Each structure stands twice: as structure tokens, then as C-alpha cells.
Image (cartoon, rainbow, N blue to C red; front, side, top):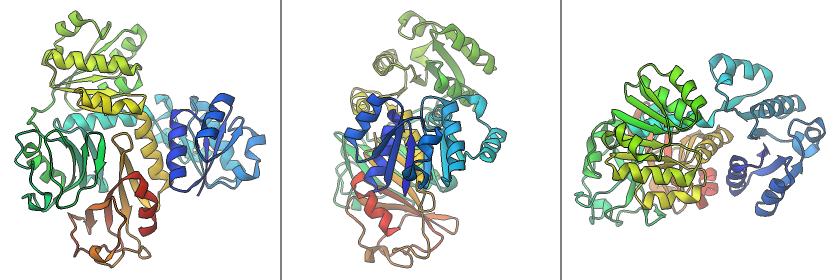
Length: 443
């Protein structure tokens, strides 16, 4: 597939990198010469200096022959105009990143579609939704749902007293609806075999039926009380989206931000939640507002280092769970190593969402895990697939790839070597990045 990316910022760079790794033909359009040079010298892509909505650029034969345009500049309006112009130039599918909440909604989406924008994504909203899902399952470090919620991927950290440590996985007495598909150990992702053993402090990825996962998660990780009281530090777009979501879910929400305008905007959106204008590093303020009694503290400022500091302070003052937003993905392992429970990158969440659209028809959805160290993919089995109608033990799957769960006629099961994937089934695949191209060929 030939993909045009408008904007070579962080999201644009990440998307280009993932698409090149999957052998897509990528063209990047960027006005800023410095950004264009960086991506030109770093990745095997074609670059064009210019405005993605410019007729001169869109009339380029290479651009017009593209199958998809993804507009991810810092301007919502530029992204929208670029997609509309691309549609007129003959590009079949368009995706625009739109951050302004005024442009988001069912009626707005229908209007965008009529203009030629096939899909819009709001990074702050999808990040807020991701954080809310983690808060709904207190012991989880990450949660991803597939097959309309019938299959769940759950990441937990193994406690030292867990009965499942230091025993070969093949000998573990796990429910038949659950499979261990990945282990993160000392910042290295492992696709386990039956002889692999879980160690204390490993991050373990479990796939299976959501109810079965709820019943067994306490055997792996520390039991935590349900999250009812949440303190959010940072009332930016993510913070505002998250506060509204959590309040609707019945949680008690407190938000701290030093910007008076942000505080006023959020205060008008909340019915019961409280908003405080002040510094998140003000220990007296944090203690006065009960940070130590909070079930979770979510740090969402624009400063990665400040978020880390705030999370560690909150933990030291007694907070049960801490979550950080991070801009630089290379900080994720460090933050987790020093004690932050969950670290999320809006860039990776956005890239994963867009990748699932790029792969639509082959992959139904895609989740990038642990700074893109692994991917979880939901794949529909077609009649022409190489795996259709065959026992899994007869299929020579690539190394570092595992079929974690299968949805067959509305029922979820964990497959074994005798299982047969049938046309119409949906399979959840867990794989390392270097095997994605090979996985594509099988499905």
C-alpha cells in the first residue's frame, strides 16, 4: 500500500517508521525543512517539502497514486483541508487527526465524511479512554479489549508470593479460557513457550475471557481495592476528557492545574468533581486535598520529568496507584522501573489506532504495547487465508508470534495445536515487531 503522511512530527515519524517496517510505500509531506531532513535521513521514505493541502503537492504523480492519506500536523484545520483536497485529487481513503473537541461527535463525523474525511481521531480522547479502562481494573498496568469486548488483554506485575512463579508455564493450573502470551522482563519482551517460568516483578500479558481474567488476576498480582477516588494533576485536553469520563462512571474526581483558564473550563464541565488552581508540586496542597487517600493519581502535565516527580511524590504520600502521560517513549521503561504503575504515550495510542485503520480488511484492531515492544492484533480469518481450515500445529507460524485467543461463532476459546481456525473467526495475535510482516502473509 502507498501511504501519504502529512506532518513529520512525533506521530507522523512513528507512523512512518511502523509502516516502513511493514513494507508499505511511504511518502511524507512536511513544510519544515528541518523536520523533513530528519525523517529523510532516518527512514526509507520519500519526502516532499510543502503544504499537504497544496494543489502543487497533491498533483505530484506519486502522491495522487496513493491509497491512503493520513494528516497529522499540529493544526486541525490543515489536517481537514489536506484530507478534503486529497479526496478530490483521487486518493481513496483519508484520516485526519483532530484535537479540538468542537470538531468531535457523531454529527460532526457524518459531516466530515460528506466532505471527504473518512476517519477522524482525537488523541487526547482515546488516551483518556485508555486511562479510564486501566482505572476500572485496579491491578492492571494496561488493558486492551478485542472482539467487541469478548476478549481482553491484561498486563499485570507478578507479586513475589504468587503461586504461579518459578513453575513451567505448561504446568500452571490456569483456567482454560486464559493464556499467557507475553512476559516483559528487565525491559525485554518474551513470547513464552511451555518451559518458560514467571519470575517475581515480571510484567505478564494474559489474554482470554474478561470474566475469567477478573477471577484469576489476584493470583498473579497484589489485590487492590476498586478505584473510587482519583486525583488528576493537569487539566489539559487529556485531563479534561478523563475527568468527565470518570465522573460519569461514578468516581470522585479532584483536578489540580496551575492554569486558571483551564480550571474554569473544566469546572463548568463537571457536576460534582472539584478543580483546584495551584501547583501540582505543592506538597501542602496535595496533602490538604488528600493525595495519600486517593485510590489513583494520574499525572498529565506536558512535562515528562514533572509527571515522574509528581507520581513518585504521590506514591510516597500514600497513593495506591499512579499513572503518567509521557511524550518521549524512551522514558517508559525508566518510569516503570522506579515505581510508576502505568505509563501511557498518546503518540503510541494514536499510532496504534491509525495502524488498525491502515490494516483494515486484514487486521480489525491493533494495540502497541510497552513502547511498541510488542503488538496485539485482532485479525479476521478469510476463506483465502493460509491458516483457514488447518490445525494450528500444521501451520508454521513465525518465531515470536502466538495465537492467544479465538472468537468462533460468538464464543471465545484459547487455542491449542489441535485447534482449527475457520473462515469468519477472529484471532488475537501477540507478536514482536520483527515478525509482523511474516504474520501479515499468513493471514
